[in-house]
Image (cartoon, rainbow, N blue to C red; front, side):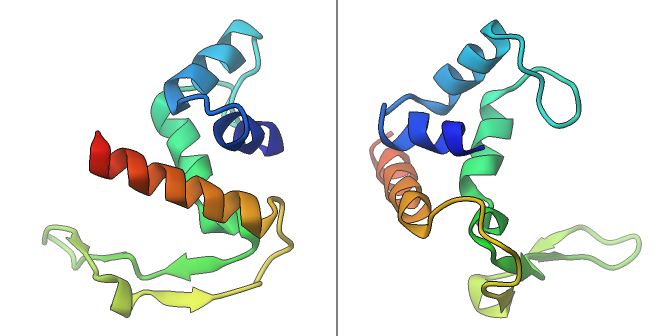
Length: 104
């Protein structure tokens, strides 16, 4: 996981490039499947990597459509887990993703 963050932040590799690199090396994801851009993106944006637990992002009732809740409704527990990724790396990742989303 640290390698994914280093490749993204320090080497400026895209999510797709990181997935392709891991697949070329024969490294399976946690489910034993090939990597995709989406699975790399999920790792890069998951706050659990820095020890935070965030829930209530979505809600739904039976036989109803899923509703994405606004951030002010999310329930946060910062430092709930031991961090795997340094918070500076995570914040740098967020800035890169936000900049890419705006420009791209």
